Length: 245
Figure 1 (cartoon, helix red, strand yellow):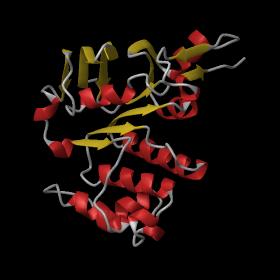
Figure 2 (cartoon, helix red, strand yellow):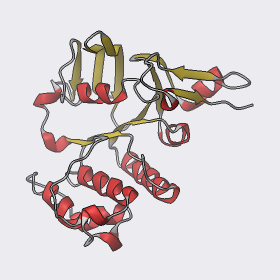
Figure 3 (spheres, helix red, strand yellow):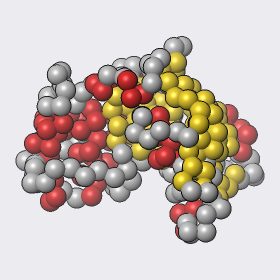
Figure 4 (tube, one colour):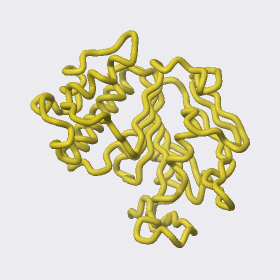
């Protein structure tokens, strides 16, 4: 399997805090990888380093064999946690706007249909529900038919039905050969979608393996609790993984 992404000892600090602390990882072509961790674990910072949005303090990142900033933009798709679209556009107009950024793109209405918004394509973006807005954001990342897709907590704020629809979409993309890197704090999501799962805690990769490997490692009566040491994070700072008999 050809590696499309290789990260070696990536480190990024903010002040005295290491948001990402020496993380190494590789993704093979067509693989779905889920990075799981609580709020503040460093997931978004790591995604930003992988996509060239931020420069690591040390370590290296290679995407399709080159620096991520040198990769042809049409080969990448990125869904950030925070999305700030142009104002006063319908869902269809917003997706069409992003389609216009590429020389070749897919039909916006077809992409909206794939994310379950065929009936809401003429609704103003600001009038959509939170879940519909998130699905519209996902659609904007698919119009260029990317080879490598980064999804930073893609189902946050989406109702269970919408979440399952997006899961099916990711599965279809993977079946077509798209490499997917997603972050999540939903273990059900990681277990269903990912070929491999990485557990991130305090900027460090605590474990990597297939879902079944991690279930075997941390299953039974054992619980793995990932907890940040940042006192600023409270209820969202602890995550219990695979607590099962």
